[in-house]
Length: 406
Ligand SMILES: *Cc1c(COP(=O)(O)O)cnc(C)c1O
Figure 1 (cartoon, helix red, strand yellow):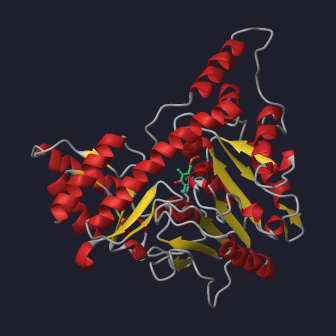
Figure 2 (tube, rainbow, N blue to C red):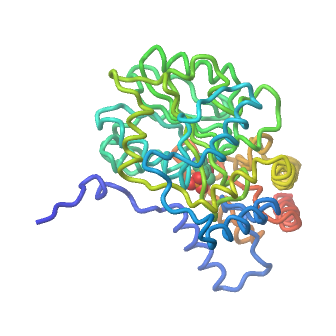
Figure 3 (cartoon, rainbow, N blue to C red):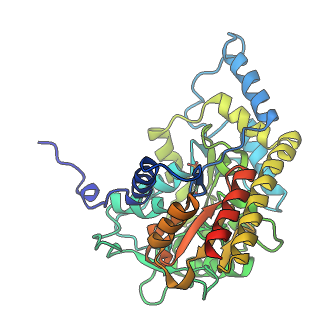
């Protein structure tokens, strides 16, 4: 008899977005008084940059020509050189030197964040932020590192509360040492971004305890303030303790195109083993790379022309963020994030529960948000709004919310 991976049976259903979908459908069936505006989605809406589209067309034509057709990338190929060099240049703009064989191009930061656990043993103690991007938690549960789910928390995980008191930046764990630490900055869902000093504290902790920082910088392109590192490798000491996940998804609108990369420095060694070598070995066996056309598209997003065009789209989203932030704060809510991230984290009024506030905004304003409680216990009392919507619809949504909170 085939036995299933028992860890999967411990997982709760993916409750958050299905429950939101259920409530929105039920409400829509009654007939909504105004058209719904969705500020709950974590997906981009603006089209790809013209330079990116042009590159995809050109690369597609190359694939249809015998002289320029490409099949598999060679066995150890982590990406075509043109893309790795473009990524290296991107790091150099921040004063960071990364070797080309430290860059592993993949089909998504979600896949890489979720599968990096393959190279770590099941007995590592994992720390996650609370609230958190659920991928880190669920994939560790699948790997058997999370323990049992008690309805709110996993018994073996260390939860690092991110609250208004600590500016939504996690503090070092007390007691149990965390071996693997997931940090997402700028953060989904809170929109908070860590300063260099705050990240240095984590780098020092990881180096002191031989831990590994798993740093997700999917939203680095949204950083608008100085002093906020775009890469963990801007922090001294990170090369001996950190793995960085980056993605073209939010940076260049690639959520449907699928391209990302993970950087593992060759200086990162644990138990005598190079993590770069282990990940390379794993990839060689389990992955055959990202389509040539998509790699050309990603390269184009980093070209001078592509940068100008994608920055314009980011500015569009950041302006939505500003509209949401200002409007909700005029409505009397405490709002966080939205400056270095496309997410706004708003406190519910008068201690209302996050689902209760979600329902109020849905039914009275026809605005869909995401209840903070869905991202972890410390998300209770907050909602997340995203800046990825249409500008006019976003402004309209904010006016409606202001109206009902009057
Ligand atoms: C959107 C997002 C990513 C990017 O995932 P892809 O698989 O590259 O699309 C990574 N991390 C976080 C926290 C995200 O919100």
